[in-house]
Length: 162
Image (cartoon, rainbow, N blue to C red; front, side):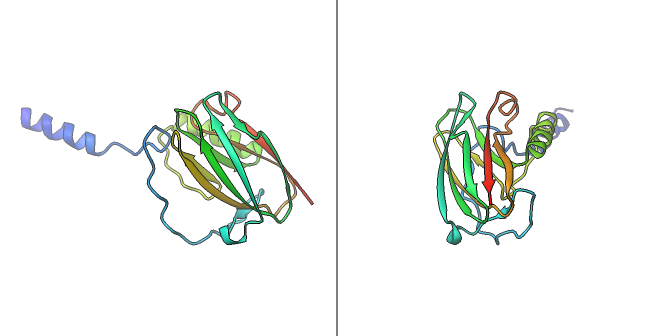
C-alpha cells in the first residue's frame, strides 16, 4: 500500500505544469523564424529592421515607464523591457479588448503557457527584448497580464500615427 501511495505521489509531482507567470527564471529564447501573422496592432518585427529602440521599465508599483508612446505607422520598434521589481512581470501588446480578454483568461488559468511574439516575460532584475512592426494606425496598449497586475493598473498606451 505504501509503495502505491509513493508511486502516485511521485507521478503527481512529475505531472505538475510549468508556471510561466510565476517567479521561475526563463532561459534564453530559442531562435525561430519571424512570424508573418498580422494582428490589429501589427506583426512581429525583424530586429535587423528596427528603426527605433524604446526602453520600458516595469516596477512592483504596477506601472510601466513610459506609460504612453507615440509611434509612426510602419515603424519597427525594438522594446528593451526591464523588470526593476522583485516580482515576475510581462509586457503584452494588443488592443484594449484583447488585453482585457487575456487578463480575464489569466485570472481563470494562471498556469497557462504561451509564448507569442507580442509578449515578453521578464524575471526580476532582468531585461528582455520584444520587436514589433506597427502596420496599422490607431490606439493600442500594453499591459502586464500576470494575475492581478493589469487590474491594478499596470498598462500603457501606444498611439500609432500615419
